Length: 150
Image (cartoon, rainbow, N blue to C red):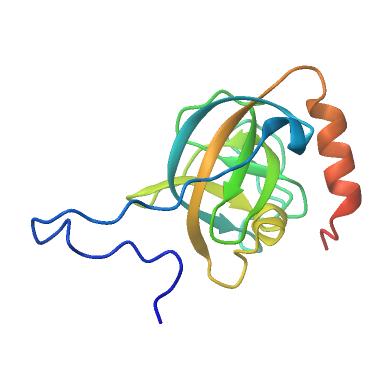
């Protein structure tokens, strides 16, 4: 039996690979105003070794907050990060620069990685989407209240 996320190796050998499963998420059901998909790729997380140190935005890094590091998005940008493998999602705020590992698109805080179910693995494939509207701050507060971050 194959893993449900298995897409085959035919594309490397010159054939056609099976299509990867698509996210079938209805924005209205999520209770969020979602914009376009910004990126798909591998996310990792960083935590204890950086806790309390200054981020690129100047604020101290808190591994218990829903924050992330991205190479080019402006500080303060809110993103919905979706993990297709686990079906979980979380809204994060960009407050740092990175990741500095080739092939990675975002570095998440420990709390965000835990919310996405990728804490043990250390990295996972994610989809980054815009979050639109004035409801973002309320979403962050309700998300932090509903998740055990520590």
